[in-house]
Image 1 (cartoon, rainbow, N blue to C red):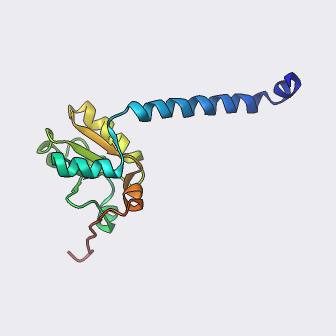
Image 2 (image 1 turned 90 degrees about the horizontal axis):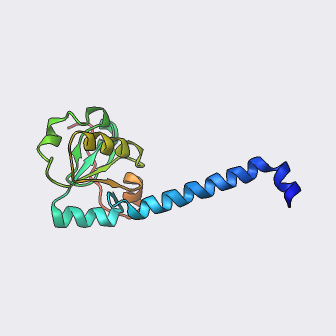
Image 3 (image 1 turned 180 degrees about the vertical axis):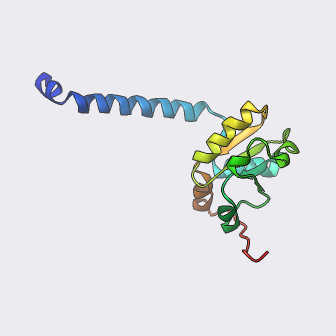
Length: 140
């Protein structure tokens, strides 16, 4: 066994690092209350009048978004005036997968927004849960 580890130390190190990363992510996900599943987001929208905020591009937004979503592309966060009107409401940020919404959440926290949430897995998870989407035609 010692010979195997000596010859394959890089694989052992990779396994150790992967296991450590998995453990950190598992603990973070369990303790981070700002990350919502699609069902949790739906409950927050219905019970606390939370505002979904779509941070994707215009074309992505038109192709399908959460009903009642405020459209503020990532590059306009936190300066967008529409966001200021909702500063004291819960905001649920989402994009397609969760990467851009995580960036938007960090920017808004720095700008003083308090009630911020992120849709885990983004719109892809929303679709998997078969929740409603609104689409807009290009000829509006």
